Amino acid sequence: MIELQTTHQDPVYLPRYATKPSPIYFPQAELFLSAIPHQLHFTYFSQLSSYVLYFQKNDIWAEMNILERLYYKNKNQHNRAKYFRKIEEARRIILRFKEMKIGELMSEFIGLFYGNNKNQMHQKKWEYVPSREISLYVLNRANCATILMDKALKCYLDAYTNFRSLLCQTEFMSFALACLSVLARLNMLTRVWISEMKKCCVLLKGWIEHFPQENSKH
Image (cartoon, rainbow, N blue to C red; front, side, top):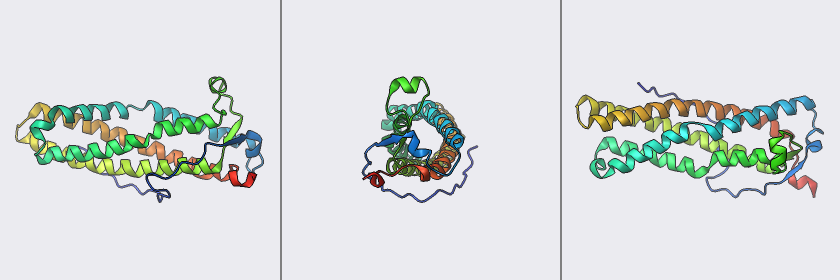
């Protein structure tokens, strides 16, 4: 049984289609001018890299694609039913989430630490630091994505409840079981995704205060 969990998010600072700042980066030495120990910067970067790798390879994308296939395969037969409208609500949120391309954004962000140099990425050797402006943008988009996925959890619960009722009526059992299965997996993966993204946001929120600002260099 899926259980609803309430989470409290930081405010969303930027609107959905906010203008993305230029992806500017500075020499790593700019970061070492901050008061915190140099080794702590390397620890933060290692943690950030682990989070970005998780967001790239997470199984949540595969489950979202399965739900999309179930939607298209069954929409003509079930599109007027209440239980199917719950699937449509979850699908709309998922499409908005995909539209944000948060995994691509995080990959692009980590690339700035390498000066977008693929050779340095392979060697795990970072020599640069992104500007505070682009870093704040990434943080705000990550917060937006987290809040959106919180809404997805509510939709998963509503849809799950409706499909359990359908299953109890012994109607469309194969379809109901398939939807219950994917909704349960999405619920589990989304909770983990939110937890990891919230930890990533906490890391970024404290670290980027020490990043150089673009306007201070003019």
